[in-house]
Each structure stands twice: as structure tokens, then as C-alpha cells.
Image (cartoon, helix red, strand yellow):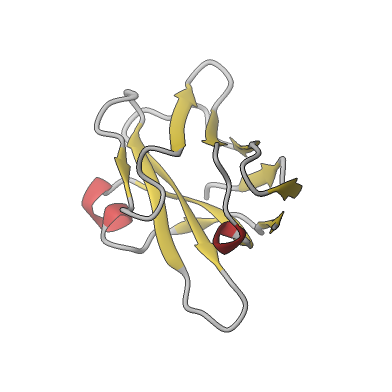
Length: 123
């Protein structure tokens, strides 16, 4: 069983930045893909970004490409989402997710989920 705990959400102004962190309770990230998803009020959950445990194959949704960066620190079993040039439409609850299947995550699902952290971007 993998437990994921997000932190770093909050309030930002449009054009600003936030960094989300997700700490995983695993001995090692080896073999896992970690990702970020988000769900805005009244909308379905959507894929944001994913990365393999090796730090390779980072993949982004078109809506965040060029503004968000996903990274992983294997020594800390932590995955990050650096969010720059934030827009009001980025407002959502952001969820960290994990799977041993990369294509499952980039396809929009995962076996393991965090509890979510709220990100609010004001105009």
C-alpha cells in the first residue's frame, strides 16, 4: 500500500507561482510513475502531469505545458509540481497519484491517490 500526502497548495494571484509537493510512503520510487491530477468545482478530474521514477518521460496536459514542471526526488520519495504563470482556470483541488504503470497514469487513472490540496488563483 502506497500513501501519498500532498502539501503546498494555497492562494496565488494570476501570473504567480506555487509549488506542490507529494511525499510517498514507500521504500523506493523504483518502478513507479507519479502524477498530478486536478478537479475544479463542477468538473471532472483531469490529468495534469506525470513522470517516471527515473525522472524521465515527463508528460503534460496541453493546458499546463510550458507553465508547469513535474520533478522527482528519489532520495526524499517526493514528487513536485512547480506551477508558474498561474491562471484563474488553474483553480482546483490538486491530487497526487501513483502507479506502476506509466501509461495508466498518462491515460488518466492510478492505483494510489493523495487526499488533495486546494489551489486558488485570483484574477
